Amino acid sequence: MLLRSDMAWHAKLIKQIVQGQSDANIRFDHLCALLRALGFEEKIRGSHHLFRRTGVGERINLQQADGKAKVYQVRQVRAILMKYDWDTLRARGKP
Image 1: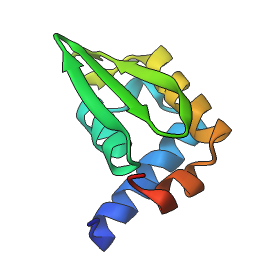
Image 2: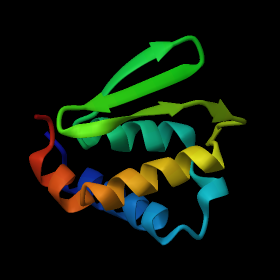
Image 3: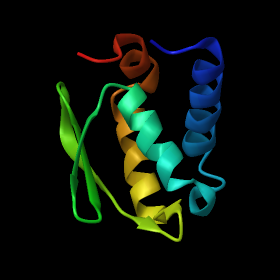
Image 4: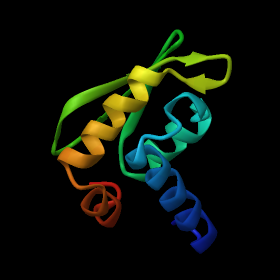
């Protein structure tokens, strides 16, 4: 269960990602936590963090670079948030 402060934190991060103004400054651990909160299942294979979710056709593959998410991977997450309507993903939580 997400606490109110967690929901506010996630909403702020989603806004930052959707606006696309600071793709190079998204912390890797924050992006992973957000995807888990949106109901994505995480598998770790070496340095690769693989995320998938029922109802979302794409898989997300994240790797960190100096504690940050890679820019092109933040763009991929943004595309998925926009395609599947992040409000809907957030409301459904885990499938």
